[in-house]
Length: 308
Ligand SMILES: NC(=O)c1ccc[n+]([C@@H]2O[C@H](COP(=O)([O-])OP(=O)(O)OC[C@H]3O[C@@H](n4cnc5c(N)ncnc54)[C@H](OP(=O)(O)O)[C@@H]3O)[C@@H](O)[C@H]2O)c1
Image (tube, rainbow, N blue to C red; front, side, top):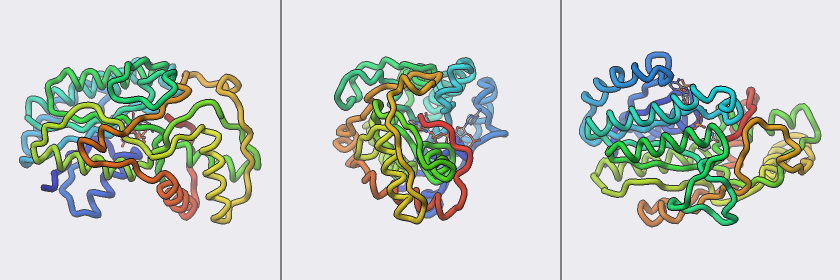
């Protein structure tokens, strides 16, 4: 059964990828996004959502691809980050519970503190280091408490050919500089938004069929890298596609003035999603090469200044 999708978000990396994949597979999808659907006003959420959920076909699934994702700016805007990342998911989940509709919600490796020294499993204790991480964790907890059928997908270092992300930031810098300094003592698993979209739609179909398998699941690319190694890989692929060579200087996180603290090792173990849903970790190199090819073909790298 192919689930109908009600998708929250439009221009975001994951929202764009889910909409694109749904379109190529002929799946019914309805998108709710700003300005008509603005999560910064919590009182407006239920009135906007209720009629949409009530009119949805049986087997529909709500996918929340919205969030406040600017990790550094969240330190200066904790109230807005809390509204979007903590309050809004709770309201969405409560509406899903009332309508009997499953919810797929996105979360982050930044709910962990990165001190475990081994890949995190879903039952590990959370201890976020930043406003972004704390507000995302509060959102996860609100979804879990709601009583709605849900899957929370915790992912990491999302990139795509559109939007703000580390890959686009590096390609932009590489066009202006022949040397960049990148943090070498923080590791994560880069994940292509296109691969997240595939996982979301597979899970949506299972939820629409009534599978009871809900809860928190990790999903990320199959390779853990430091940001410096990731940058080296990006520049290597770009050079192979005709861009000029760029050297990566390896620095410690403490040398890089950043408002938000980030975990040193927030690698995610993806065994549970493989066991429950048969979803395996996507090939990192293949997805990265595809995204870089698309970005370079587009000829623009945009204003990409953050990675979360
Ligand atoms: N980016 C990462 O590296 C990363 C890493 C781990 C986890 N995640 C999680 O993955 C999910 C998707 O991230 P992403 O990278 O796709 O995010 P993104 O590219 O920053 O997109 C954010 C989305 O949120 C929507 N949004 C922001 N403020 C809103 C508001 N006031 N009202 C309604 N919608 C609003 C945006 O709406 P518009 O469509 O109107 O612009 C956009 O669609 C998030 O839950 C994030 O926490 C991301």
